[in-house]
Length: 367
Image (cartoon, rainbow, N blue to C red; front, side):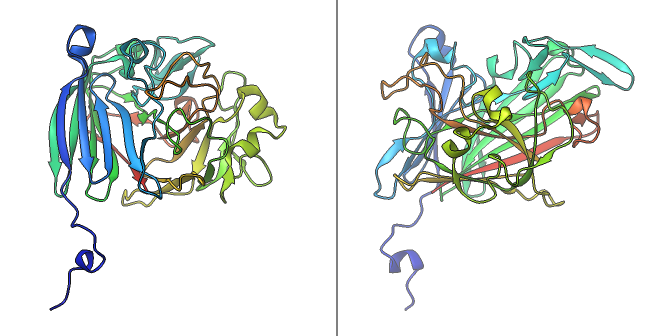
């Protein structure tokens, strides 16, 4: 009789993902925040209802040792303060909008500014600050949590009442899907992303400058002193922005380039190679830690990815390891549309209109 392939290799059959939830803390402000835990084999992810936040991911290295690989804090004061954006769902418009205003159908809409002449990550009271409603979700062999937020018409200056859903779904192989959906009552703009910082060596283990990064992008969008794109995209070939083959993150940062000097590292949008018309998520990035052997493959339906190397981290936040997070303690690979798209008609559109449904999918494959 033929053996099942898993029996033949001595591995146990994959178990269906497990989902549970509990308050983040027993009392105080933490009691109002739910922590949802998703488990599949040796992979575990936790999600907070504050900010629809991907809070932690635990995954094994090549020797089977499990570590927490997201930059995050267990201290409520950090979660409510300087670590608010760590792993959060960012919106209504992730990244920057120049001049803190947009124009739709000839109507000007001033937006809530965040400083430096821009509106960043949806404004000073963006989606990362909100409490989202959560419910368990099962979809075939995947299981997780679906979160919902209602953003009122005029929220942070953006037109249209917006309903937005974010689902985190883990499958039996340990792939974590982040699925977004949204509808609006009036024409608006929308750009959603997840702002997790990854350190595949384990949080608190130092910086990520030795991580190897590959990006499926042949162009990037240079920026001005406000981190706003100032013109057409430029080829990455022959520059520190060329990640078309694997290279250490720190190699480019150490090179002399005005774009990197201004930001103190990478904080740039990369133009991904064309995505399939049928909406299938395809690879955007591959991150590798040569020491632990852990890898992260990022697949998405989005046209861009913002590479941010935590340049401004100052040690103000401490992880569960007890180590403060300094510059380059993690790397964010934010799948999204391009910054300031409402002012660049040549960029993929971020407009959403009544009767339309916004959908976006990003897959995180930790190996």
